[in-house]
Length: 206
Length: 179
Image (spheres, rainbow over the protein chains, first blue to last red):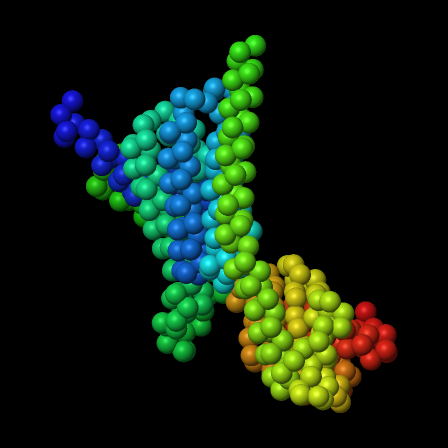
C-alpha cells in the first residue's frame, strides 16, 4: 500500500466529523448536552473541550483493547473506559476550573452516558485501528465543539446580549429571554439543521 | 468454560486499571478541590460581612459569629430553600442591631435571564440595612415590605425573601414569621 492510499482515508476520518458526519447535526446523538450546556458561549466551549477529551481518550483505549475484549462483555468494558475518562475530566475541572465546573454542573458526569462517545466506541473504534480511531475522535470532538459553541454563542447573543460574557449588543437591545431557555435551544438547533441540510445539498449533493 | 474465564478476567483487569488511575487522579486533585471550597466559603463570609476580620463557626455550615478585633460585630447565616427549579443556597450577615449587612446567593438553578437575577446586585442590595419585619416582598405586604420582586420571577424572589426572614426569625427566637 502506498503512503497516499493510507493518508487519504485518515484525513477523511479526521474531517468527516466537521460537516459530513457531524455528531450533533448528522448523527444527532448527545443532543442532551448540546442543548443543556449551550446557554452561554463559554459554557458551551468548556463542555466541548471536556467532551473532546473524553471522546479522544475512549476512542484511543477502545481501539487498543478491541482484540483483547470478548464481544459479550464489550459494552461493560467500554463503559468502564468512558467513565474513567469522564471522572478524570470531572475532578480536573473541579480542581483547576472550579467556575466552569459549577456552571456545567451535572452535565460533566453525564458525558458517561453521552450517546456519541458510546456510539463511536461501538460503531467505529471497536472495529478500526488506533490511528484511524484517533483521527475519528479528534474529528468528532472538533465537530461537536464547533457546533455547541456556535449554538452557545448565538443563544447568549440573542438571549442575553453578550458574547463570552462581555456586552456586545447596544444597551437598548431587548434580549429574547426565550433563547436562553430550553425552547430556544430547540428552535436554534432546528434552524442549524436546515442550514446544514442546505450546505449538504449544495456542496456535497447528498 | 474458558470463555467465562476470559470474560471475567477482562472485566476484572479493566476495573482494576480504571480504579488505579482514578485513585491517582483523586490524590492529585483532592487538595486543590478542598482548598477551593474553603476559599470560596471564606470569600463569601467576607463579602457579606466586610467589617469583620475573623469568623467563628458556631453551628457548622449554618451560623458564624463575625468578630472585628475583640468585638463581636454580628452574625452570618447560611440557609437553603427550594426555589422555582431547585435549591437556592444563600448567605447573609446581620449587625448588632439585627439589620442585614449583605446578602449573597451561593448556588441556585433558577431560570437564566429570569430567576437567575436573584444573584444580581439590584435585587440583593435591597436587603442591605433591613430589619426582620421589613424582609417581605412589597407586593405581599405593601405596608411593611421593602423588597421588590424581580419581574417575571416572583417565585424565586419570594423564596429568597422568605428564607432570609425565616432564618432571621428563628435566630431572634420569634419562630418562623413566614412559614
